[in-house]
Image 1 (spheres, helix red, strand yellow):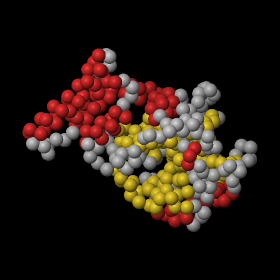
Image 2 (cartoon, helix red, strand yellow):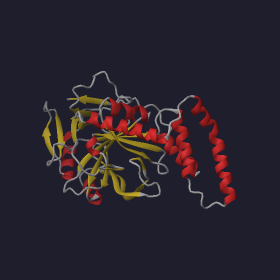
Image 3 (cartoon, rainbow, N blue to C red):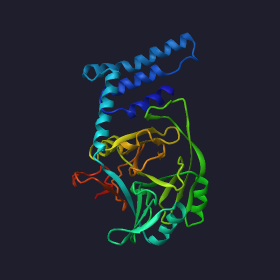
Image 4 (cartoon, helix red, strand yellow):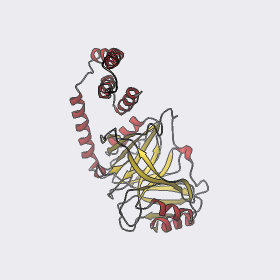
Length: 338
C-alpha cells in the first residue's frame, strides 16, 4: 500500500515519457522504509518489487526513453527557468467577474466583511471591489443578470481569501447575509511534490468556507498578517490537469507554483499556477504574501468528466496583448485580456 500510494503520487507528477513512469515507480520502491521487516521478508519484498517493474524497465529501454534521474531534474529546472522568464512578460490576473442578480447587497457584504472598496466599472454597469491598500491584489467585479448566482456544475469553484482571523470573518459573513459552508477548523495538508516537501510531515492550516449572498464560495485561510483580508486565488476544476497546466504556463507564460496531491483527504490533485513573483510564497490554499495579481488553482478530481465550462464567470487579465484571441483554454473557461 505504501509503494502504491507513493508511486501514484510520483507518476501523476511526471510528464510524458514511459521512462518517467518507470523511474518514479522504481524510486518509490527504493524509498520505502522496510526497517520493520526481518531480513528474509525484506529481501523477498525487494525481489518481488523489481520483478514487477522489469517489464516496464524493458519497455523504457527498448524505446530509448530511459534517462538518468539527474538529467530529468535538470530538464525540469530548465523548463521552470524558461517559464519564469516568460512570466516576466507581465500577464496578470486582475479580477474575476461574478454574475449576480443584485449587485448592491453583494457589494455591501464584501465591503463590510473584508474591507473592500467599491467603484464603478468602465461602462458604469458593473461594480468593482478592490483592496484599498493595493491595486495589485485580485479584484472582484459584480455584473447583474437574471442568470446570476453560483453554479457548481460549471467548474468554477470560487475564490480563496487570506486573512489573520478565520473565526472573525466567519462571524462577520454570517451576520451580513452570507452562509457558513464549512465551519472553522484546522485542516492537515500533505506534502507537496513541487516544491518538494518532507512527506513525513503534515502541514496544518486554519480555514473555513463561507458563501456570499449570491452563493459564491469563499475559502478563508489563516496565513496573513495584514490588517485587511486579501483575495488571492481563483479555484477551477479541470478535466486534464497536465493539458491545463501546459496551457496556463505556455500560452500565458505563467509558472507552476505548486503541485499538491490531496490523497487521502480527497482523490484529487491541485496545481497552482501564477506569476513567478509568487514562487516559494505559497501554502496549499494560496499565496502568503505579494500583490502580483491573482493565482489560479487547477483541481483535477480522479474520474471526473469533461468540464467544457459554460460558467458565466470571466477572468480578466492585464498585460496579455500578445495572447492570440483564438487560443482557447482547455476547459472553455471565459478569459478576457485588457
